Amino acid sequence: MTQDTAPSPAPTDIRGMLRSAARNLGWLLASRSVLAILSLFYLGFATRTLGVVDFGRFALITGAVQALTTFVGFQTWQIIVQYGVHAAHEGDTPRLARLFRLAARLDLSSAIVGALLTIGILQIWADAFSIPRDLMHYTLVFAVIQLVTIRSTPLGILRLRDKFSLSALADSMTPVMRFVGAGAAMLFDPTIRGFMTAWAVAEIVTAATYWIMVWRSGDFALLMQGRSRWKTLIAENPGVVRFALSTNASATLGLSSKQIPLLLVGASIGPAAAGAFRLAAQVAQALAKLSQLLSRAAFPEIVRAVRTAAPERLRRILVKTMLASSAAALAILAVVALIGEPMLKLVGGKSFGTAYPVLLWLAAAGCFDLATVSLDTVMTAVNRAGTVFAIRVVAVVLLFIAAFVLMPVYGSTGVAMGVMIGSIAVAILLGIAAARFTRPRAPD
Image (cartoon, rainbow, N blue to C red; front, side, top):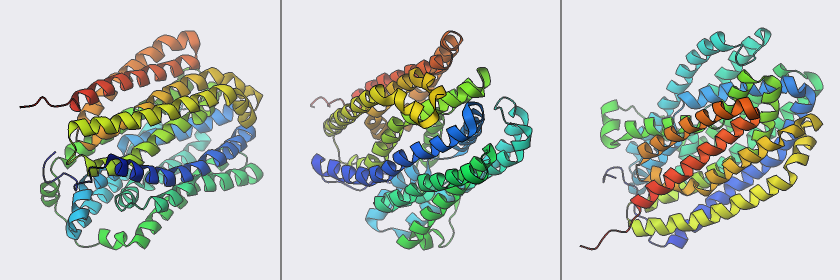
């Protein structure tokens, strides 16, 4: 890491860093607890109102749109934290303003490119996504709303300022509005269109809340100040283009183990199987959400620590965080194994109980993701995002090979098994890479 891009020095007390990360995680968990409880209700509204087939179509539409959003979007929140920590520590307000504007421009560009891609892709492959022609217009509008409400920039600003309570409040708007909207759709428009409208409104309200929080923190005015040239941005933030592309590529590959398996099930087996797969994935994604929370909570603290941290210290940080996350993963997997099938039936009805094997495989995959999330976070913080990207390429290739081999025999369960194989590959390869990077140096 260069002197220009390195974050500010951090105290050498590992416990202090972990306490800060734990405090950040507490705010995030408060938000996600709301999501976990309300998601059971609004998913129940959708599954019981639409039925297995139409819920499958709805899941394929939202999954395709989320896939496109992730494909074109940059992880600008990581860019802001990675390159903004030093400027914030030094009080370099103009440089910070230019960085904020760079992130906002990337989000805007993503929205424009994504809208154009969405129009073309949905026009060509609407049948593959099981999108009825009468829903095409609503699907396009929903996709555009999903794209223009990308909120990675305000998320990064709040993360940089350590305002996790504000970002947690903004995040909570999504499940709250989906719960309200799903209830309204069930009563007044019990169709795929009605639930799409509810999900779109939730995205708009959440994005608006994020920007309101940034405005209240005073950083919105900073974002709007002056102009910045591209050459200046590159000079101030060496490696930012490579960092932005590699984190985007890693996120896109990460998506391949989340949304693309759903689309594969829908295209190969049908919308009914996709509906059951989607509900199982939603329950299992509690692990993936916890992984993201741990990553987001720890990332600012790790960025602050890596400048002065010796490899031995990073190794101790990794060991402690991996032990904690592994214990959490095993506990959650045990809960899923015990109550997973009754939960599927409670939320979706008896017809969704057949998705229990899918749920177990996806939950097991989530265990590996959760146990190794600290490895991914540290490798990204020390500018090894390219290594993470290469690892995810290998894992996605293995995922698809396994899915295509197993799906003819095991159906949608075979796809879930492929997801598990991909997660195991990521865990092993990240472990090897992190072990090499944090290996104690031999004395001179």
